[in-house]
Image 1: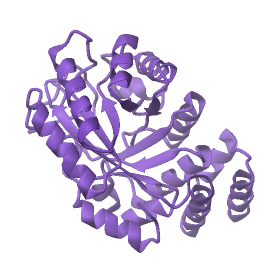
Image 2: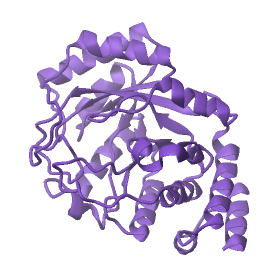
Image 3: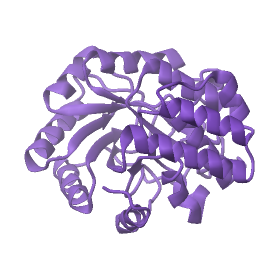
Length: 325
């Protein structure tokens, strides 16, 4: 295993690629081999994306009452959770949160809403456009949106008000997706990604590991993201929420999580791979190791329905590792 890690790692550093078969072999790493794999992934990250850590923050502008049945989601109307639901927030509150997160150190600000997607004639969509316009005038933040499935017209309007990146997660491998979502298809999600790319905006597309998928399906998922040539890859680690279909799911071992971060970096050497939800619960004291295993971005502050840790702690962790914000 050691020779394979070094051989493949050096090949990627020289501009080569990792094959599907090699990824499967590397996924069997255990013990100190995971540490070596992580170290090589760190070298790959260092070469292709440098030592800066990109920080993103989000706000859940509309929470709950979602028609979709995503097995992990606390906002689904198919589940019975304790999530606090609310209709669209006041635009002023959204702008204030953006200003606050810029001061805390964030580079990107993402407005997120529950639901399958947005319509151009939706009153909430008009508020979203207003909020982005005001945030662009009040801050230097890069603007991101996560509004579900998207039409070409809606994508154009988002771009016109300054949105540069659109988040639309595939969540998992195509072969496992029907086990997680039945109310819409994988192809619908891919269609939105293609619309965003055609519009000239960056695509932020990742998903969740630990849903019950196999290791091979995680590799399938990573290669799909490579094929779609997405720009940023947020990786969540399942934090099972009581009341969802996955509430009893056994969490992944922290070293297994780190191994997968390293594999994603090997498969996607030049992409922005970021920590998303679940790192605090699943990695606990090992969170810093993800940044040594190829991760170069972080979602900071609170998530959609769960709390993150204090941004100051994340900034200190980044500095302690000799990395830059």
